Image (tube, rainbow, N blue to C red; front, side, top):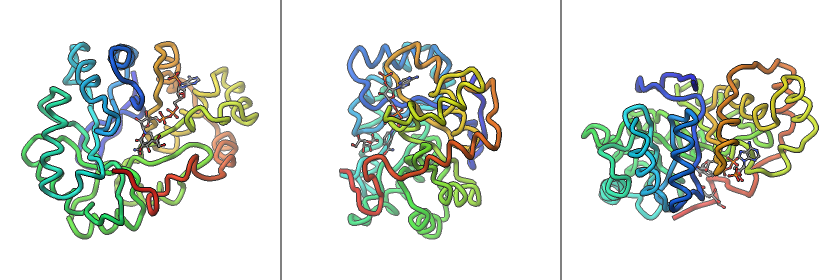
Length: 274
Ligand SMILES: NC(=O)C1=CN([C@@H]2O[C@H](COP(=O)(O)OP(=O)(O)OC[C@H]3O[C@@H](n4cnc5c(N)ncnc54)[C@H](OP(=O)(O)O)[C@@H]3O)[C@@H](O)[C@H]2O)C=CC1
Ligand SMILES: O=C(O)C(=O)[C@@H](O)[C@H](O)C(=O)CO
């Protein structure tokens, strides 16, 4: 069982979820179905992953739709009030579901300058029942502040790059002060050399767990919901099984001391995706 926490809108939200970037086609459906079978209840998707159809199919096959939180994200090309309303309904069509449980702005695209009206549309979709929780992704403290001031609504979630190479201490403190749940994307640093770091191996060995499990436990103990992706059922089970041990303060600090920066330059002030 993956434990849950309450979002600022009262939604019960898993402390660990499942990433689906690159999971497509029948293999993708099977992988997502296996993840649900392994206990994941939070699924992360996006228009730009071109796999909403696969996510929806896996949800239907699971037979437990009501237990799942299905996430999708507005792409940059759909920013704007009317565009977002249309984009949400197109996502619902592809998902084959009656509700997007968690709806995020994928990237803020500050040079486009339309994320506030995009968020207003999401709040209206929430009032209409087409969306459960509203949140954002890749937002900075300044962008969150503007969104809250101009709409009066605090996003439930900000999904951001986070892993021991980029622990996001300042942004997490801002989230905590405003009741925003942090979600960690690329929580394993997308299988970079992170999992081979000696400090990760040492922490894992001290608890008789794998390097991946040590890293995912670091996320959950920092109060962030990691969404690891794996196409492999055995790894999916391994990644979900991180709640039976607790890292010490020294171990948490040792993992955080790996900080060196972003993986590939996904700075939301400058990186834009359509
Ligand atoms: N909002 C945003 O802008 C972004 C959101 N995301 C979301 O975050 C999710 C996770 O991030 P992602 O970039 O996929 O990277 P992850 O950090 O989740 O790493 C995924 C990689 O790690 C491998 N892996 C998974 N588990 C294990 C394990 N136990 N042992 C060894 N290797 C393992 C996977 O391989 P294999 O599949 O072969 O097991 C895959 O190659 C995405 O899928 C997506 O949903 C990601 C990037 C940006
Ligand atoms: O996966 C996502 O959600 C993204 O936003 C992409 O930027 C992705 O991380 C990527 O692979 C970019 O190289």
